Length: 217
Image 1: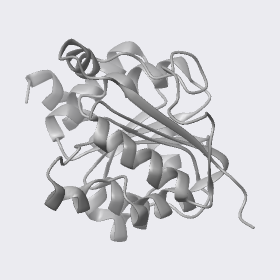
Image 2: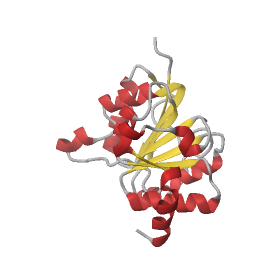
Image 3: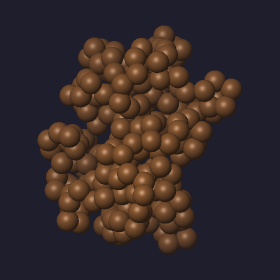
Image 4: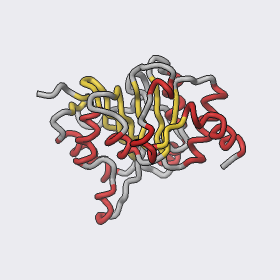
């Protein structure tokens, strides 16, 4: 961890960090983290937070919560957000699925992002993929009607599974005919990151899925 990231975590921990391991005793307090109640976007597996920061900066009317298990990355994200004056961004340390299960309620999120999650390419590891039926059911429940679930990957077999699993959820509607076009503009914009550039340089195709939550029957 860099000194800058460590300093940001030390100073901002109580105001800008939610520890998912403490979800039951502490509770997720949006007002404490953001100083307001606004539409909330959750990114599961934000890494170093390049996309999270860019999207939060371009979308000040919504709040962004970046979730990851990598504490140094969260510290670096907080430091860059503070330096850029981006006030609508906070981070959560821990398991994003546990956060969805215990940290938020049904129909409480404006969007969920899952950009380039681990593809777990071996067949025996597919059960660890975050885009699988039981987790997608949880995600769709946590989205408000009209909310967005946006995923992306550079691993073609995983992309096919993503599209199939998301299409099978009765509460989700595909905004496009199959995979989404490169989402450069709002409201589905996703900035180009270093990770994505490496995938493109390696000859891999980037594939996005953008679904919206429909009202329950």
